[in-house]
Picture (cartoon, rainbow, N blue to C red):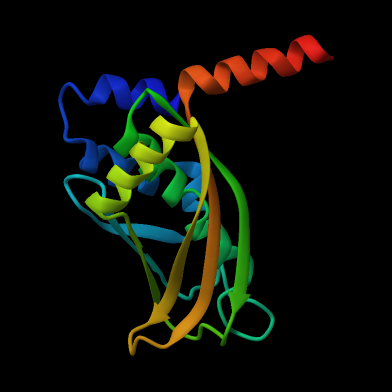
Length: 173
């Protein structure tokens, strides 16, 4: 539903606008209590804000770790899907979360892909058909204190290769 809606809306609205408002209006992302507050035109930069409120406050009065994780979880994957286009498959594979201090106020996170990273990734896929990458991002407070660090592992593959790989698995079983 989201992918077909995005494809339809691309005729009328910039992809960065669809990305930002799509996330912010999506029921599953809204439950994280975060908001996308900035998205670059090329989608290489995304910034989120997570305010402390009654929906995400834990027993100790800080932002629940699950809210922090869910606020960061889908960003890199969907960002890469949109940047790379339909010739690639992108999946979240793993996440390592490290909570460093309680989030007692509004926190922010930035998700960044450089043009060089994207070109190197495309070249790697052209050579090897698939790869895993690890992206690290921090959630920080207004004073830039690190609240949490997330190491996100993403699987990226050439779509044709990936479909053949799935087909081989099915025939084995």
